[in-house]
Length: 142
Image 1 (cartoon, helix red, strand yellow):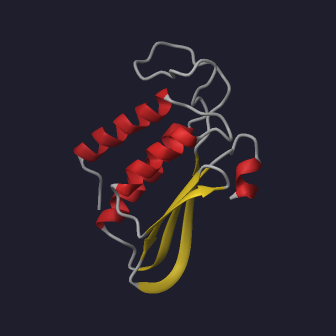
Image 2 (cartoon, helix red, strand yellow):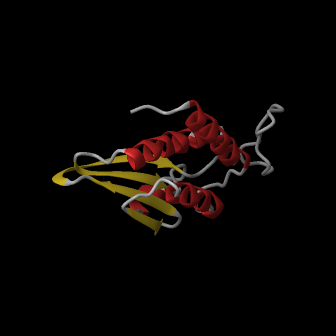
């Protein structure tokens, strides 16, 4: 199972959208909304929101019992001004995804896309989009 060129194009556009609209720890409401909207298109068996603030989790259930595997990424950005003139640079003054979290979120969304096409044979996979990673408060809150 692989991603198509169309998948890569759509995921790249989503990553750039996330990059343009960074939110610092505890303020990731818009980011969580964008992630939730994307996940709804990938048909998780369960979608949990509001975890530890703005956290989101998508659950993909296998047909047989088995282990649970969790993949985690971060929703928040840093209070740092982005330098440069990329067309998809941050539109939020003094805030940027210079930590790579926009890329981390996109990797998990790519996994969600693949899981929507083929569920695990057994067990379940949980994709967790954690809030407030940069302050350290998010993990405990989730």
